[in-house]
Length: 118
Image (cartoon, rainbow, N blue to C red):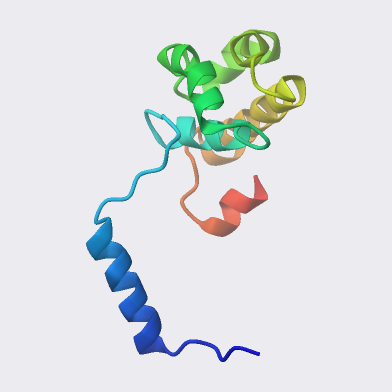
């Protein structure tokens, strides 16, 4: 069984990561924290390329939870129909958007616990 890494080894590993890629970016296209959250929700069992293709037009139109609620589930479905499980994902994104509007004043929470609770 492998021994846990000590602090100095972990620190050295992360230093090497930072030197190799000082400003890492994900593949999902987004315009703000909300659209990144939506893109991540849509990416389950889908490729980033497919999600990006579906969300380009969507994010040009919808970049806040309230705008997503205004678009509605049917409108969202029209944008994401090329992504697998799109009907269920549309329901989840609308539910997520409603929670953000009602409980977080339309803002994406910054704490990991709050994000996981969504």
